[in-house]
Amino acid sequence: MEARTGRDKQVYKKGSIRQVAGCVPVNKKTGEILLITRRKGGGWILPKGGWESDESRQEAAARETYEEAGAKGRITGLLGEWDHHVVNKSTGLPKAMFSFFEMEVDKLEEKWPEMGERDRQWFHYDEAVNMVIKPFMREVIQNCSLAPHTDRIQDSTNSSEITTNTSLPATSSSEEDFKDTWIWQFSVVIVLFAFFVWLVLTRYDQDLIPERVGKIVPFFSFADEQ
Image 1 (tube, rainbow, N blue to C red):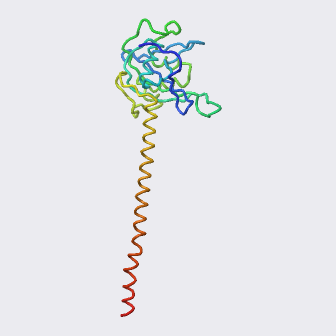
Image 2 (cartoon, helix red, strand yellow):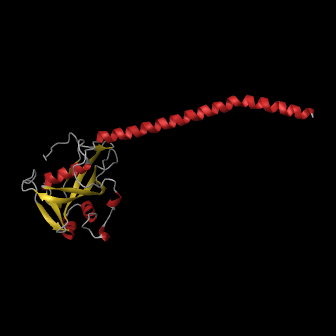
Image 3 (cartoon, one colour):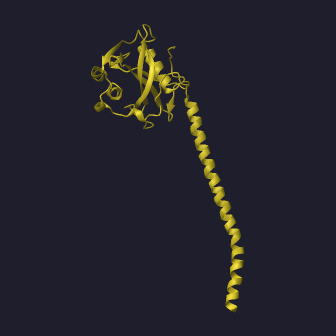
């Protein structure tokens, strides 16, 4: 797996919301969570990075976890989505949206792309919650499988994106946009078809009105003669 640079393929939603994917790397046997240091300013965080258009969110999360922490493993579930606390003044939308998955770590590489820029370290759950410097990352950790049920913020079992491995086919943003467009077009066709059927039935009823009146008038004329 190669490290990526630049944002040429970066996925954005609604035109300006940068999509970021990351992992909570866990060791179920020891009950520990792997954290990394920031490039600038120090402090412990979770591995994360930009989701690109030629990969799925799970693949982006796994790739960034390898690039930043040298960890490889299985994505076991989507923990949730969090909006960036900074809002774009021109759009009123959050600057980014973070999607975090849980990864059961199978292997830690001795060499990885950002090993010269970051440190990594295993922490027990309680330590990890207290060590991360970003408040929303505390919520992410509190939703992982190592957290006591009383700590959990969101319920990942309702997620439709829970997977058992990271070798799933990539779903690009262009494919998602195509699906959305297809659904919209199909809905328009259904509405137009329903309108056409209504128009035909209405016209049919109008054509029958003279015939019905013609049958009713002689009946009343006959009744008057009696």
